[in-house]
Amino acid sequence: MKKNPEREAVVHPFGPIFDTDSRVLILGSFPSLVSREQNFYYANPRNRFWPVLSAVFDDESGRTIEERTAFLHRHHVALWDVIASCTIHASSDASIQDVKVNDIQSLVDESRISHIYTAGSRAFELYERFRPCTIDAVCLPSTSPANARMKLQDLIPYYKVVRNDVEEG
Image (tube, rainbow, N blue to C red; front, side, top):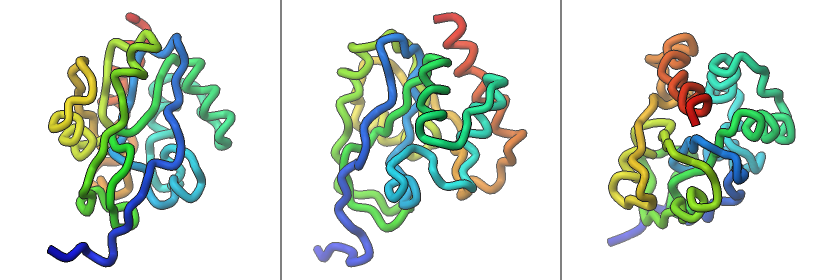
């Protein structure tokens, strides 16, 4: 079987954001091309992830990597991706093959994480298939611009569970 020449083998270029006080983990599938180029999560300006979390926590997440990292720590939210490496075409989740998953259980064991959410159905599908952790994940809608049927205001109510879980934790 021939490999699709448009796909490239890629290793996740940056690590998780978490600390020992993290209570909730949000998992994406794999960084987009823009995120890989900028070496940070949800870097595409059209992705609604940061505006959604800012609205949920009623706190500006900032624009720089440092500001967004501080935002996550301040709100006890960890961020990572299910996939450690794969073959992928550009940013297309649908093109992902040859998946190797991250050691999510180790991250959970080093923190206070008790709830895991996936940012989109592809991340959820991969999490369920590979089961890299003992905590069940809950699927939230994707904040990607590819999920054009949902507007920013439609996404916010779904993500409020993250704040609720952090405050309960």
